[in-house]
Structures are given as C-alpha cells and as structure tokens.
Image 1 (cartoon, rainbow, N blue to C red):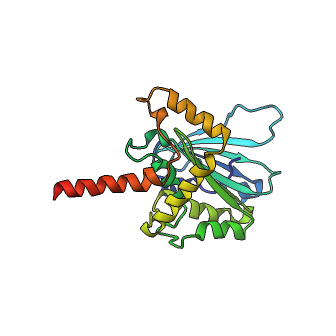
Image 2 (image 1 turned 90 degrees about the horizontal axis):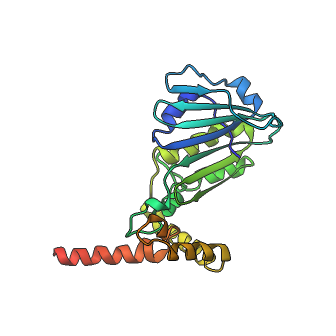
Image 3 (image 1 turned 135 degrees about the vertical axis):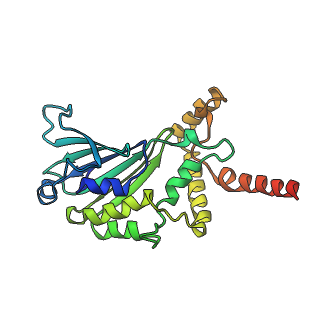
Amino acid sequence: MFKCINRTAQFKRYIHSAGSSFSIKLNFRLVSSLPLRMTDPAVNRVVSEIIRSPEDKRVYRGLEFTNGLKAMLISDPTTDKSSAALDVQIGSLSDPSNISGLAHFCEHMLFLGTEKYPKENEYSQFLSEHAGSSNAFTSGEHTNYYFDVSHEHLEGALDRFAQFFLCPLFDESCKDREVNAVDSEHEKNLMNDAWRLFQLEKATGNQDHPFSKFGTGNKLTLETRPCVKRGSTSVKSS
C-alpha cells in the first residue's frame, strides 16, 4: 500500500511533527540510484529485521528520526508505481465539542495549496499527469494521506505531498466549498447501512466519551452553529 522516498535527510526538512508515521515503498531502481544514508544525523534508529511472511519477497527497513517521525521503507521490484502515505495519529475523537467534523474538514483543506505550491490543484494535476492518484481519510484516532505515481516522478510528487504538513495555505476562499464537500459526504452516508449502524453505536454509548462525537461533520456543525455562537458572543461583548 505504501511506497517511496529517496534521501533520509529530506525527512527532517519535510515532516517536523512528532506523533506521525510515514510508510514508503521503493522500486529497486530508485534504491540503487539514490541510496538512503542511514548514518545521517536525522536518523535516530534503523531497524532492518522486520517480521514478515516467508513468502513475502519485498525488502523492508524501519527508520526512527530524531524529530519523532517513524517510517517504513518497502522495496518491491515487481510494483508498477511508487507511492507514499503519511499517518497523523490524531482524528475526529480530538475534535472540539463545539465543532464536530473539524479534523475531517482539515483533511480536505490540506489539498488546496501550499506556500511552495500555491496553485490549488497543483498536487492533483501533477499526479494525474504522471499516472498517479491520491486520497485521504479521517478516522477516530488517525488521519491518513496517500498517493501513487510513476517511478520516475516520485521525487516531485513527494515534494508536493510533504508541503501539506509544512506550509498549507488554508485559503479562506476555499472554505465554503469544502464545507459543502464535507456536507455532501454526510448526506451520502445517511443512506448507508454501515454508517447508520456506526451512528447507532455512538448514540447508545457513553455520551461523555469522545467516541460519541459526530466525526464526519456537516454544514450545521462546521459553519452554521459556529457562526451563530460567534454572533451571539459579539452581541454580548458589545
């Protein structure tokens, strides 16, 4: 599922937040042309003995960086693409009680431009031009972002991907559209039996536990209700 990066020194520059994990998969051609420098000061620990199935012929290597980031490198000579994924170990259970769906909304906003690549669709356009694709998901305790791309364009894709976590724009002009996108997801889920059962579990569980939170969010929780509260606060203060 996960795939690739070239030089360990780039991890230090790309991802600065602790509590995250990064899984990458390398094609052998990339390993030989751009070898990882395991003695780099940014690498705190290297794990070469990874437990796997005897039939799994892929090569694995685990890395732990001085900034707390953990990574898994996977080399597979048979794969037709390279890819990468980053997991942020925080999700909808950490949403503030008054803004349900905030983590999910944040996931959407990261795709919409960065300081280095401010063009809104730069990331998705680069991937589509090079046989790639991307997606993300938010769960209770994780937010995961991933992509795949043709081998020779991995470095360019990875550079664009890394900027999500360094300098996202959070452009206010995109806010309303992404609130509507989240709302559309929620409307779609209403007719899905799996989502209904999930909500039933939340509704019948301990309402003081974060599990009971409405993780997807919609226009009411992300826009209407917060705006009303801000308005009432401003009236009181005046």
